[in-house]
Length: 296
Image (tube, rainbow, N blue to C red; front, side, top):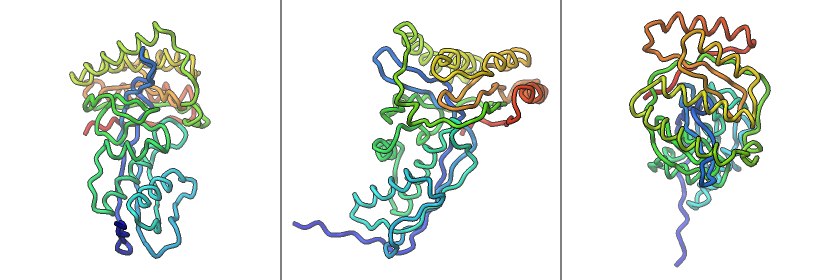
């Protein structure tokens, strides 16, 4: 029996968003050899506006460099027997090449927009499966912080929402090709891999309990353990800033260029600490910014 060809209504338009991350709360390798990370979701995001037009000659993407999102749409439509004509426009406020999961957010926003355009409900697991053949991906298709096997694009565990926290950050400059970075074998010893497993357990407990100080301690240790892979020249100084102002820890983009001091939003001296962190960070670099965890 011949499968009928499905045709889409012309000019079906849908939009969707996906949040990014400030690097990772924790990233490393476990004793079983699997690479993992714990996401640190922030309020910045990517937006995809997708118009499906079966009469169009192919899919046009803006910006044209976002070829992975185009591949995702074309493959998904082809599997459904649908023509891949239309326009995809990607936008957002996530820095590119800095470790904010901008590429992952583009892909997840695109998948969500496609699902809406087709009238399908695509959950996080279905989106992860769509992304698995395209690139190593952060777990930004899930809400809250998650432990995620990013090379495999598979969920390990949903950990829950992070306590509202402000990140005062320095960008050390340049860009990082995360695909190339993820091809590098992790040089961690068996002792370090056991330490990562311990930190993952601590992170899970701290997030479930809303313990910002324990979360910050995990982030700081992860940053230090990963100095052998992609060293951050400002890390020691930022740890000093954190201690001086009374922050709870330092988070980094492990495969990116940013380093940030964590200040809980419910700290009684919140405004003073954020102001002091900004002043200290400006002494370390010209590109200083403030980010906020996505706790919803």
